[in-house]
Length: 196
Image 1 (cartoon, rainbow, N blue to C red):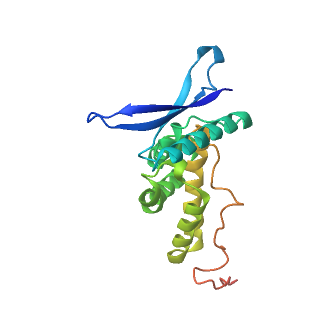
Image 2 (cartoon, rainbow, N blue to C red):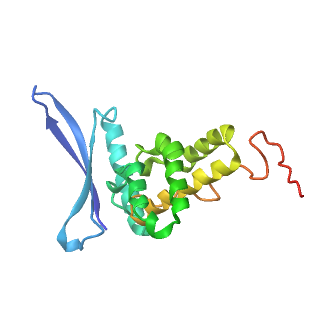
């Protein structure tokens, strides 16, 4: 797989010049003979100088080539879709997979807990740390079962995003996320089970 970073000098309408770097890599979905490239432009003014733009371009190229070699490459433009759009795509599958009551519960969870926090956010910008912070905030004001339910719905939407190639890995994994105990209430006190 080939890639390159090319320096270019651009001229503004007022006659002043600025430097950009174009990083490009051969599109791994196409045969090499097709000579189709994926590229990204790094403008020196936007990156705070020529050296920073060059470093950013080289870093992007390295990331793309490494991902291709590991077999984990995805189109960098695919992840710019909002989670709200992914949820609507996922929602279209609910009648085929979920019971009507579950369908209604999931819709309510999306409306109350997920859409306000994540709906307009890029799906590739959602990471385990931000999900954990959201869970901790939810746990402070809701019962553990509510938090588990909200997480289950978010995990399902992220699973669809992964299967459609919008993200390379689902950040909703048990080793990355810590959920509140279902046997304790939100104050941390053990729930009592009474037998009759």
